[in-house]
Length: 114
Length: 111
Image 1 (cartoon, helix red, strand yellow):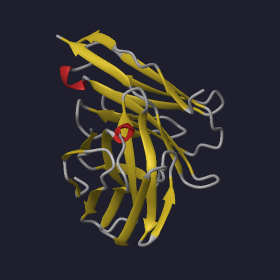
Image 2 (cartoon, rainbow over the protein chains, first blue to last red; image 1 turned 135 degrees about the vertical axis):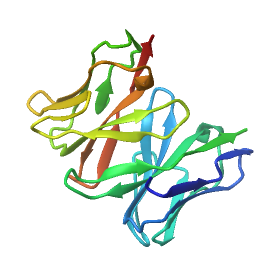
Image 3 (spheres, each protein chain N blue to C red; image 1 turned 90 degrees about the vertical axis):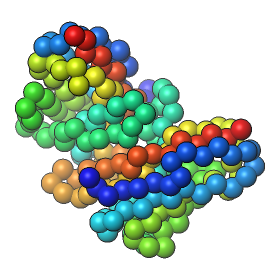
Image 4 (cartoon, chains in turn cyan, blue; image 1 turned 135 degrees about the horizontal axis):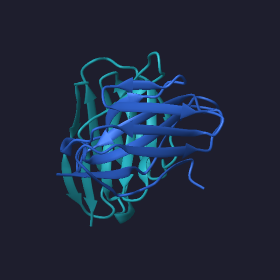
């Protein structure tokens, strides 16, 4: 158990509203990631962080922003939600080791944008 | 062409069968390779890292062929509990961090 929690676990919102998803870890890992998972696409990286206030874009970052003010928390914000952002969002931590950056995932957040 | 490709399946096998999954990747600079397992409506969980020399963990064997750019996962003596989606994952840190997930191969093991 990598000690990762996500909140909320489920959310339904309307188009145009801002949404913030939270990822919390208890073990002070440096690397944290946000992915979305959609049928037929697999997991796609949205943003990642390699330390407090250090973040970078992934392959599907448009429409999303992130913040990491504390090691344990990584926030994903949809500034103005759209129906195309309906998805399952997974947070992960990366553990650098022999095989380079194995990732462990939180339980996910199911987001529906109406 | 996708950077990481897997046969989506589904693979339907009886208990006790041996089943093999293959995965191809396009980035020759890739440095790390993994297999993850994902149960329905759950998060992916790391099953195995894949080493250049190949590695085995109980009924599971992973192989890497860098020359042909593919990774394989072999499951022997399949159990009902092996039913899940298996994700191939390839990582590199060339030109910035990058981890690419395949879309997954669905496995059903039947009694």
